[in-house]
Amino acid sequence: SDAELRRRIAEAGADVKLWSKRVVDAARKAAANPNDPKAQEELANAQRELGKAIHKLVALTKGSADVSKALSLLDISIKDSGKEEVDALSLQIKAFLTESDKAIQFIQSTFGGTLSAQKLLESSRKLFDSAKELSKILKQLSQSVNDDSFKDQLDTCSKIINDKALQLKILATVKSSEGGDSGGQVKSAANGLATQIEGVKDSVRALALRFKVKNTQKQTMILKQIASLVRRGRTGGLNSTR
Image (cartoon, rainbow, N blue to C red; front, side, top):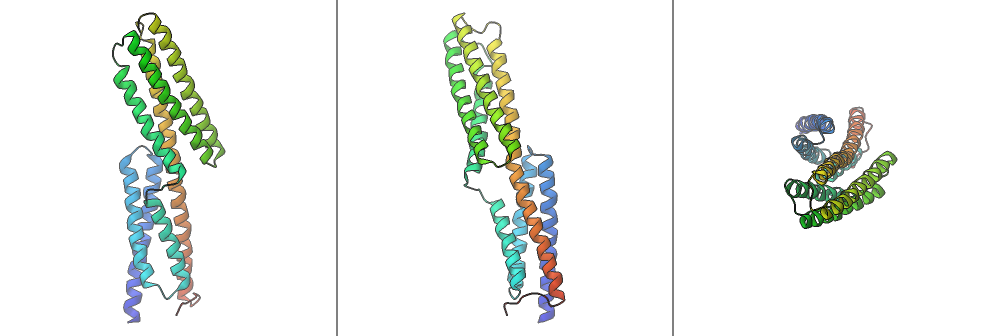
């Protein structure tokens, strides 16, 4: 009956409204805690649940072309934010985070103890190659983003990592010729590079989160459009497919 359909639409609409609010709240929490995996998972879960609620409401409002179109746009946006994207930017972000973890682990496991002159030289060269790769990925990221401030930040980080790794390599070469890192200067330089890389990781995570939040803002705009269409529908102002 029409009364039963209206009741089911109202319930489905309430679910969309509930999960929409939770998506916005989760996005704010994730933005405030970019390094908290639990906050990121809460955002992804809220987006999935909102997608389910939208599917239900779409099925119940097929008679309204305007509402169905808006809900379909929102559903596409939810799917885009919840899936593993394959665009260049996402791949570059993943590549940097993976390589930076490897570099930091290498520094911690290699430069923590006493190294022979030969091992010092070999390790510094290997670290330099790793840093060059990180610098390259940051350059690629810079070319992929449209935000000028982020471009400048990524370019600066790329140069700093490359320069610090080169300085460490030169220092290690000198210390190796002297028989080893007796004063701990190479170890200190390596730890400094690890700290620098860790800081850049935070910036790259922030970049990834910025796109998540941007997509959530898009979803919010579509939700406002849906609310407006529903209000119009109460006064008979919606286009119908029937």
